[in-house]
Length: 395
Image (tube, rainbow, N blue to C red):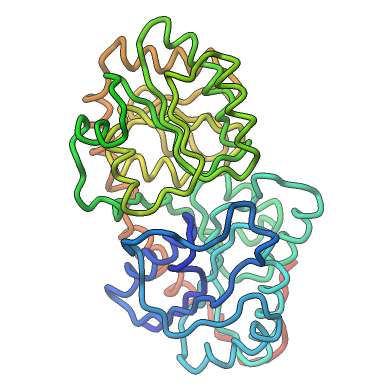
């Protein structure tokens, strides 16, 4: 079966780039995949971090592309269908994560429907943006409604999407759990060796990992530390590029007298360093204030690390409270402290690791492969390869 995937890969950083590359790698085990990526992705002034390029020296998620185009050029998107349909793909897969892509996707879909009725599948990382607004929601709704099929990673996002495209299209949405990330494990060091490398001498280590953004709840994790430190001498590693002023957190660390208990690394962590941070940790803590799903949870599970996360969005569908981690109410430092104290006081690490191991088949990339194949089969059965050239829209 021929498939086309359009999305980011190396040299672009971030979870969507890793995800798209791993998806293509998985699909290529059974199908011919045309992989189209970008020569430019975001304008420099728009990207919240330093830039959108991956500084890693080890390209662990690079996947060969068929060609690249300038994703900042509206004309390039209008011309793209001519390069796609020549491969006669059964499906075209597009990642959806932010309203930023709405105009470009609209131009592509309008041009595509002028020459082909090939079904389009949106892989929805977030139906609703983390920093949502009425304007963003309206624009996102209008573009997503033009898709033929959808893959979401939680029942919560399925419900969010149905509000936009209507219950009559419920059969077009497939729920497939976010696959785990295991690709960053190369020379996984032991816990003590990793801590030594990071300059941490504590016997109990927590990890906050990923882009530092308000919705991830780092403030509440820091506010929970004084209560935890009264019971256990823990050390918190914060590792990830700050998409907001890091001084906010540095001042809070100072205010709470946490300088000796926190190591703050507000920069992007390259591929070759990721495993050291996870290997050093007992517990990964990201107490989300809002979210639909979490790539960080799946990265932690890939390293067999239990988690403490906010009970928001679709995360309770992934984390079993008291079994593979803890679910805590958003904006609740006391609940975070109680979960972490229970973890150490009750000696739950090995039990949680064993439970994570048993859950891993749920989150396999094979499951995503089979989901795409099921959509392709349904698309043929439904006769979606229309003969007309009119641009098709949905209510």
